Image 1 (tube, rainbow, N blue to C red):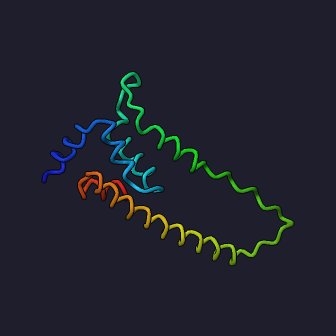
Image 2: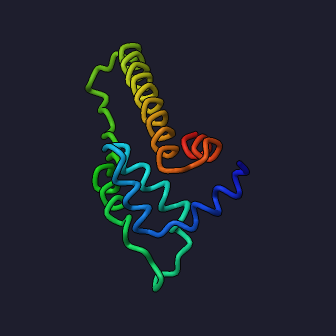
Image 3: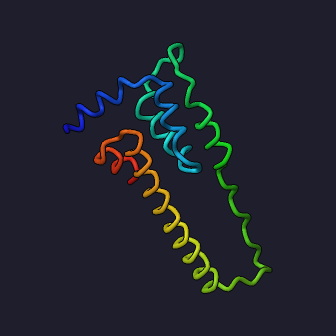
Length: 126
């Protein structure tokens, strides 16, 4: 099926139908999927014609993912093992990459579960 035809059909869904579909997805992926749906189908609304159905999930994400506070500068009096800190940072980054990949795979499956065509779901999780 043509992706544009599918997207036009998705745009015909009511906000309550989107909410019902989003709520069939398990947490924590549900919050991520709700954001994608909101940006794809509700972000262009005028404030007076707004659909508040997915607002809960937008607020929930902001509350659960506050910006990380910057790390304080290390004073010259503290000895830092630079190689060890690089190794730890590399390991943390590697673990985060693995976790991010798992989330993207789950999000892709969840988006397709609620009707997103595969091509569009792939674009949303890059």
